[in-house]
Length: 281
Ligand code: GUN
Image (cartoon, rainbow, N blue to C red; front, side):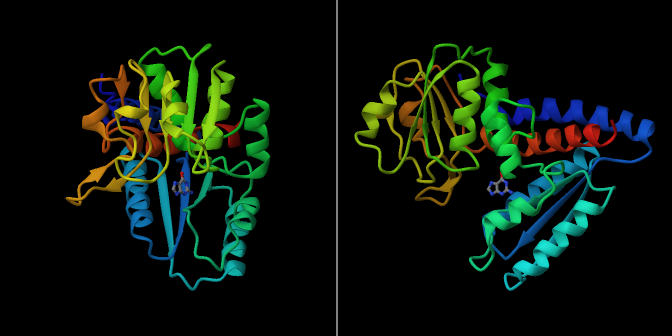
């Protein structure tokens, strides 16, 4: 089975669109997301454009603030503090990575945890760890929705996550643990990675290396979620998984493009809407 993230995300976006339409009448204002982009990282520019387009599609008000790479940390923190105070703003997202002279931790801590649409604020990370309600990071949230869509019960299943980032690896491991899976987080220093991966009923791959995971890493009948967005030797988009090599061995797999990517953007809209409700309680 090829998991069609694009189609599933469209279905969810249409639901959000209807909801936004109704609430805008009831509350007399639209949910609003502010995205801050510092610098000219090509991938970030694309991601931010996708976020802007998706917001427009569902009717969420979106504002993208762009700064060149010399923008100071101090000015960025001041801008965030101002947005924290602005009652018309429901969600604040600072696109990562930031230029080297800006302290990422300081920036994420400065965002009001009640407007932290990425779920990256330490208070929200702690809540996720404790299993309390909080904005859940978008890519991991999207993966859990996809597993739900294919009616996959994680109870007692072996999950192997490759990658230990704060954005994907660590939070998705926590979410799988909450669903009663047995979770392993593997990374660049893991010994005998193919052997570790072979025990996975669900293999979550977030490495950032084009087509690194071939069928030697895959257990027959596994579910494979590919977070990678890379260019192959022909400059075509591809994942961290060698799709053609593993597709006949798996039970289900997300393609690149059209798998995890669209779900991430859609979960950002969902998180914005959830924060809007929270601010209007
Ligand atoms: N850069 C790559 N993924 C993400 C994400 O989910 N959120 C933010 N803010 N930056 C990112």
